[in-house]
Length: 350
Image (cartoon, rainbow, N blue to C red; front, top):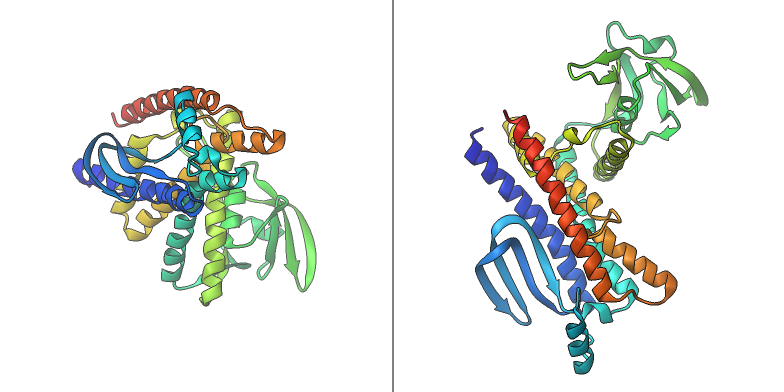
């Protein structure tokens, strides 16, 4: 896929995901009576705008984000004085804590919900749904020295198994060649210790266990599709958290972190493999966007949520101006991180 098409596809994907995210904030704000001054896609100079009611809807030049500007969201001292004098109860900071929490988390919830809906479409297009019952073993398998056909895998390394993907996720995080399993065998729960697997070493030095067995498929049902899609989406959420933990603990380095350029490249590669691969990549990105936005860091939705939870506990808000300063510093640091990661992404292209 040529560079222009890749960039265009990435802009479209990011644009849709950002729109969904900001739409969540917008709907939540409107539902609790907060005045929204502007709903914008993109940043920088305005290319197109139209005003309906109290809200200006705009498309801006730089396709690198978007925002919902609410009255009294990050007010200055002058804004607070103006709003209080006008007795304007439509300002964000005038609303109850639980209402503001709904507004703050709504964007992330919409992103994760979008991932779930796309996953339903992907799952519904498959011929069969997965099970957690061992069907057969690959040639040269070593796990069959302990594991048996028709064993129903309930747990791997104490992690509950709901669908086949949970087996893959849990085992790929273990590279010592042995796992503990709990299975249902002939109607009885059986604890299997140190089930052996061959360890594969890849070119980059990373190791992973070779899953040398297959599980049965089962016929699709409406609720079966919903169930599998839900657990697949939750698996993506879990992978985001574990990847963050691995990054913090040093299992992965900062050089392995991808930014906009790396993500755009991945979108292009996924699209060349077909619609299913592209949709799976979109699920990964939208769930990542939702989860990462809930991290308790300044300038992110999670940072705002943290301030609201502190307010709920102490029953007294932190001055909006002070919170605004924290988010401004956090935003600058976040932009610095984006620049560093983008620079690394560009270096990987050469």
